[in-house]
Length: 242
Image 1 (cartoon, rainbow, N blue to C red):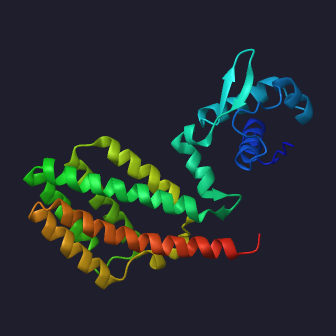
Image 2 (cartoon, helix red, strand yellow):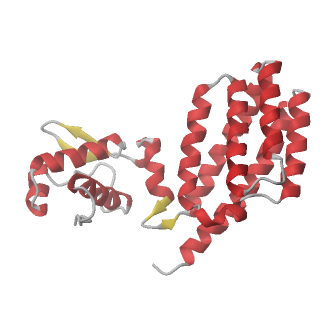
């Protein structure tokens, strides 16, 4: 049964309720959702509101809408990347498996970024990336300044790679993982100063030597630390009372 949260716009609330029902397995791939007219009557809303909610599900890739053929649930592996934001934290509870899979994709992107940056980056662009890395390495930075510097360094590498899509994909993954980060956990998520310094030295030397493997290994060390901390936060959130 569709239950709508009153604080949300009606179409959004209906879309969210149907999405949760689909993800919970109440509607399986190939199933048809209740007709638009029936949903409108059940929820005491206009059919245009239901139609807008169904369009939102279609944009997520969760359903197919066929004129005269109803609304059919699609397999989850055919949905859009946007669906991950609803899977990574479902009803306030982080899903460890989805978080792990997100980090696996992040690791693959790091490898591609390192290789392309070293292969394509001009000396000037790579030097700019090294300068940004030097900023992130400063021990006097507070947590907020460190994370800004870290992001700027990654943007520098992406600029060297010449691949704009890599930047967009990393932005999407960062936004997804931010759902299990808390504003007061900056210190917990930031590596210790000595770890940052060690990793930065490795990456800097590898960029100078145009050693893609060395750059990748350093970035993966940084990612492994972030993964460990975020999974710890996720477990803490899962243990909290509902």
